Image (cartoon, rainbow over all chains, first blue to last red):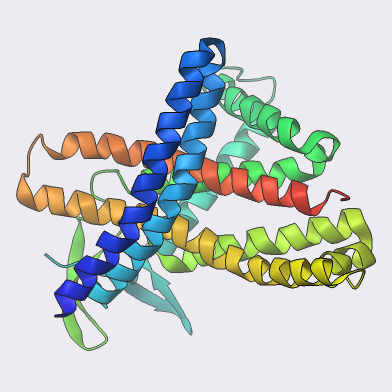
Length: 70
Length: 242
């Protein structure tokens, strides 16, 4: 039962950021396609924004790790 | 397979417990101090490759800070550069062979377990919490420095109209949320990377973990950049007049 809770914690927590990063990368690629000269700048900002979206998944990952190992 | 969320204590200096991650963070801090003093004092004597690399790093960091902060860059730059370089080394040191794998068997809290002598410093919540506290405190410091105490308080307690009042209260709560988000983001990324590497090493001991080492180097760089960029953006938002 506890393992199920741990699995669900990271599974549900990972869902939102996964969608977010998907949308983010899609939009960034669209922007790069429209404006290839700005590709470098867009890529940098994309990676930064991805790190922020990923942070939400990391919170649930930390919770799952705490549940598992403490 | 044993994975410990907390850093393992190695020895005691008086009442101070020295853990394995503390030890390595001291080594990194000492290394950075010695390196920068050597580079600074030997200014003319060795303009070699090392100095070129360090100047390149400092130059690119400085242009980043100037882009965001404008004329306040001189005051903010040392803090941001220190954050970036220290966190980068702390993240990358946990990829080195021997860190987390060489250790002794000892007793922790009455339980027999494996104690690694070295552990990545940012894979310990204490260090990331300390960095987050420094970052959030310096946001308040710069805010008071540029806006004055009155301006600083006005960011949180604004009685002009009800909307500004609630926004101020939300800002006050988000200052505390920043501490949690700073320390959990860094800790979570690096610790999750260590767990991932340990799992990969147990599944396939050879060849297969190599791409994951590359991933860890990339993640370490990105997280150092994110931590310092976020501090920079928060400081420049907190010091600007609305």
